Structures are given as C-alpha cells and as structure tokens.
Amino acid sequence: MSVFATLVERLADLLQPLFATTATAAAIVLFTMVVRLAVHPLSRAAARGQKARVRLAPQLAELRAKHAKNPERLQKAVMELHAKEKVSPFAGCLPSLLQAPAFFLMYHLFSGDRMAGHSLFAAPLGDHYADALAAGGVFGPAGVVYLVLFAIVGAVATFNFRRTKRQLAAQPLNTGLPDTPGAQTINKLMPLLSFATLITVVVVPLAAALYVVTSTTWTVFERALLFRDQAPAGALATGA
Image (cartoon, rainbow, N blue to C red):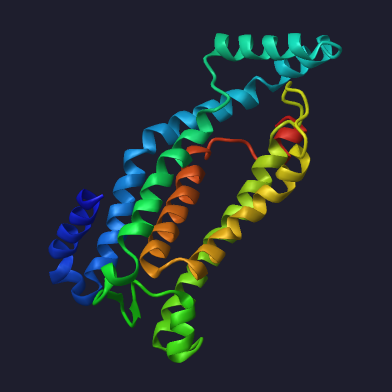
C-alpha cells in the first residue's frame, strides 16, 4: 500500500509548481487517470463483447424458442454459441472489479490524518461533507468546493442516465438466457445508479471522492467513445 501512497506523494511534488496547495488533489486525479488508462484495454474488450452479444441476440432468441422446454439444453446451447463466437458473458465485469482495489486503497491511504495539511482549495482532503457543513455551511468556503463537485457529478450522471436508458432500450430484451429473478427490476434501476456517485461524495473523505468523481467521469466518456458507432434505439426499432 505504501507504494501507492509514495506514488501520489511524488506526483504531488512534481505538480507543486503548477498547483501549489492543491497539488495533492491534482495528484489524486492524475493517479486515477493512470489507473483508468491501465484498465482501458479491458474496457475495450468488454465493449466488444457487449456489442457481440447484441449482434447475437437473434440467434439467442431462436435457441430460446427451440429449447423452451429444456432449460439445461438451452443454457448449454447458449454457452456453445458464446464459445463459438468467442464472446464472454462476464467480460463487462472485469474493468469494475479491477478498479475496486484502487478505490479501497485510496480510501484507506488518503483519509483522516494521512491528508492533514492537504486540501482542495478551502476543503481539507481528509474531511467529509459533514465537516464542510459544520465549518461554514452549504455556502461556506469548503461547502462551495463540494457544490462544484456535486454540479460536476450531476451533469455527468444526467448524461450517463440518458445514455444508459437509450442503450438499454436499443438492446433486445430477449437474450436467449432463462429469466433471472429480479432482472427486469435491475434493468429499470440501472440508469438511476448514475446518481449513486452523489451519495458516495457525501459519505467518503474528499480525497476518495476525487478518485470516484474522476473515475466516474472517465467511465462515462470512455463508454460514449467506445459505443459511438452503436445505432440509437429509434434506428434499431425502425431497422434504419
């Protein structure tokens, strides 16, 4: 863990001439971008897999109709089709799983006393939103820093909410797999998860919040880039 702390400290030293007292905050943002860049190849692979699954949806629907009375045969046929087309049903999980350790390291290493003396403008990096409210209220010096973060998260979440809804609408509902309990509920709630980052920013230390906000923003624009060639829902519905 000390290796990551040392890396951020070295980055902060390098950025000191440009960012002065906010150098550590800038180093956390840069560290986050390095982590996301490292897992970008997996994100590209996950995007290719997701596009392939959409492309295979008609064949999966045929298999489901053919083996409607034999769930075990259906599952085997679906796995065989995925293997033949070299499509992994789990590829989309890998980028998120690999980012989780980085977040917990950031939370552990850069919270509390470890961030003493480091701040983002008027907001100490080791403090929480509750500390900012206690120090000066919503519009106090530290509170304003959080308001800017909330505005960034809100704008990114709104963009991601609309994009996710379009993406879910564009994907065929029939994937060829047996219905999973709660799957429809999950699909309805998934677009709303875009706003969960707001809660995270409130409850974690500011240093960890910077990591989350940077990573979330990266994810939204990365997926928009990777899926830029995906037809909108209306085009798919009309066969355009």
